[in-house]
Image (tube, rainbow over all chains, first blue to last red; front, side, top):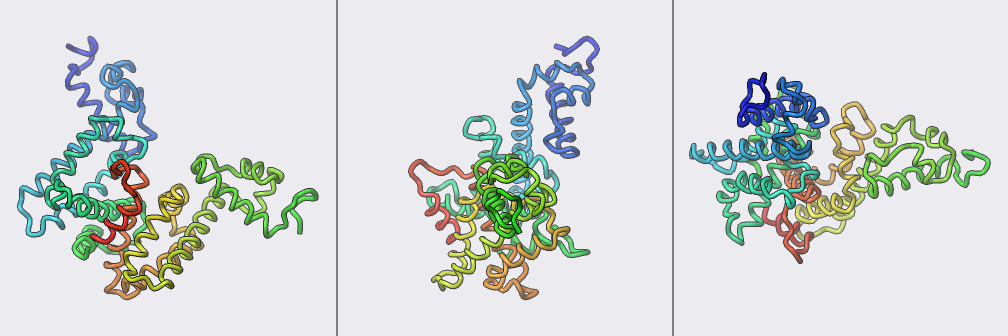
Length: 186
Length: 186
């Protein structure tokens, strides 16, 4: 089914096109720049078309956060599958680099406004993203929960401090190399 | 010098009264609720009076963040002075508990909007607050920098994840006890 007579999109790929365009707007302009009407304009469909896929702006933001956790999970799984010498260090670096490369998406994924408790789809996507990390530290076992939370806090704190410009990077210093050093020292 | 004929404040204590009132508004309503006019009303002075102490809303926010770092530094010093059995754990817990007890102030202190590089007073207050922690992990030495950043990332991440409601606290679970467990396991 096509969304309108002159639209190049079919129902399924319009949703994907909207999400891709929204991800670009999110990184370029931040969450404040994201509205369903702007998105319709960016994709070249009628102002009403996005509403067939997203009830509201909140639903769009939730779908973006879910997409973020899915991409994050795919990266974590790829790293684990590559059997790195030091899995914790490799996954920690992947976590921080993902945050730095997708700053606004990362902020959205962890936004206190998007309450995961009332959004089962988001909760599932977030849990799936952490499964690889949790399994690695044994956090799927009761006694591993505290260790999993500790490992998460470390890399999340590093990501947030870097994103928020709180860690003074020295002139000429390579941020990724510093991230590796900090993670290894933990 | 009095600020106005019917004001109960003298120049010096009006600034302090404005800051105290602003801290209360900040915690109750968040940063968005803080304006110099609202503040004047809360303290019972003329709308123009706060401008004698703060050029702008940005100057007020900066002064609040400086106050936050000063109180934070005082707590860290008090903990260090009490010679705890495990200084790192004690200071880590103090860091996280300060964040939980002063959620909006903590967010303001680490807001990317308040660029420390262009605000020497804020930079100094922040550096002073971390001096105790830095000294403890040897971060005032060149080779201690990475260790100091790692220790900071751990506790900051834990504070942010808790503040943002990302860590699922179990029903009946004591948050401070969980914080202690997580910090000890690091």
